[in-house]
Amino acid sequence: MFFFYKENLMRPLVNFGIVCMSMGFLVEDTVPIIWRGLMVMSAIERLIRQVDWGKLDYLVIDMPPGTGDVQLSISQNIPISGAVIVSTPQDIALLDAWRGAEMFRKVNVPILGIIQNMSVFQCPNCKHETHIFGADGAKDLATKLGLAVLGDIPLHINIRKTSDNGQPVVVSQPDSPEVGFFIV
Image: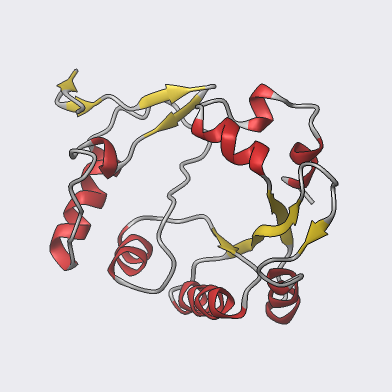
């Protein structure tokens, strides 16, 4: 649990020079956060304005997929420089990504580009690549929407293991082949 300090501000986590805060840090691990409307906006306001962020170059807000209360509340109440759409390459996920992009366009938030997540699985033993969720779906969507592809992240066990251990692959193994996928 987090505590308030200096001027009633919450202290965020800092790891590898990245400042991080989450509603998940403020509730017990197994407690679901089931909020809508005013409760969502209140939580967003708390995370934006009651955290000692210090001096930031960027504030990145990771939102769930879709066009619901969270996305709409943030885009209507907080000045946003741009949105990045993240999607797996499968058709059903791409529909949500497309809707999300269109929502941001309707509320005049610039879309900076698309990141394709879980783009390909590479067997750690034989190195054979399999497109479990389809090939290039997010790249095709970026073309249809006239957007840049900002990254193409594979489904790789090394990325999962290092992240679960709190040592992201870009930090713990910066020369590994998986790191090259992060920026296209």
